[in-house]
Length: 412
Image (cartoon, rainbow, N blue to C red; front, side, top):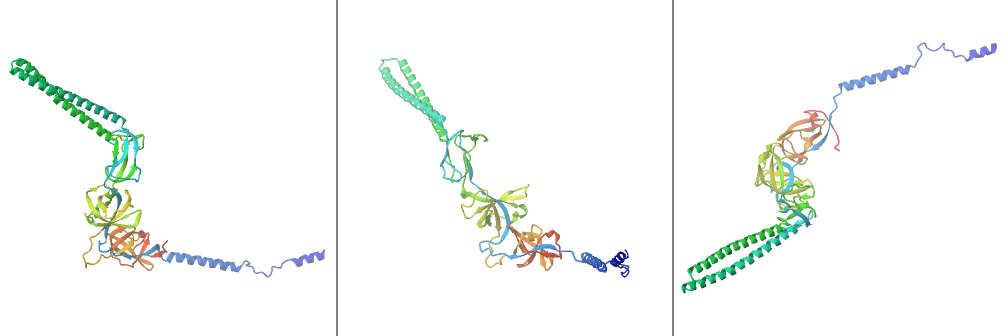
């Protein structure tokens, strides 16, 4: 028993030599280090300068020479291609369509047949009036025969009266018959003329069942089909149409644009211009101003301007979107060329004749007022305040000011 107790005493841990404080001293130093790092980060966040506004950098570009034909662009405006000569072809009479000879995109010549209507009733009416005319002509011939006989009878009776074979009263009766036949002749001749006019009217009604193109052009809309009723007095709907189709004279195409009334003083008749269609943005079409419509739209504060194409091309179609650049007159020989640079519209703050840009100066920007010219597509023409090669900031310009810090990012 004593041996077991002695063995157990040998297995006990002697803690009399351990320090009274105990624990791990390196843990305390770690906590102190973390606290110091946190204090340093807070101090940096408090005293460090605010982060800059993220921007991308673009460069002002020199304007390429426009040649001697015209000067620089003064103004840009958007509009649509329209046809000055277009018509909805319809019949003059109401009738059922029996034949349609056009399709969308087909070209027609002036007076070409485009459709026919049912002419059964009108043709029957024409036959009736022709028969009436023949009857009147036959009656006229009969009156003429009777009149010739009456004239011979009066001549014989005059001789008999002179020879005292008959009384003057019998001559008077014959003369009265002659005068009556002459009156009948005049009446019958008028009846023949009336019948002739009736035939002409019926013939015109028959001709009206054939619909013809009023001028040469291209069919853009086919509105009626065989079996439908066409009526020029109908409002349409159901199986009743007001027209057969629409023909457009492609040689009469032009562009109509709405110009802000604040800039209408930059546009005048005969002024050179350039048209760019939305469908072909790289195709610059020479043009000129036809007229400035002398009235303004009070709702939109715009004035309508008509612009003519100087070159005809089958790619130009009605209702296409277009942009028109109104050019200054060609500069005189030896005159200085118009100066200016092109900058993206995103780099310009403001609209109208003046605006502001922010020049990049390292990590800050400098606000500079500029004089604006025309806006061409996504670019502004700056005619004062900048030089080609100037670096400009593009981004949230409302957050920038003179001397503001920026963070330059790569353009996407």
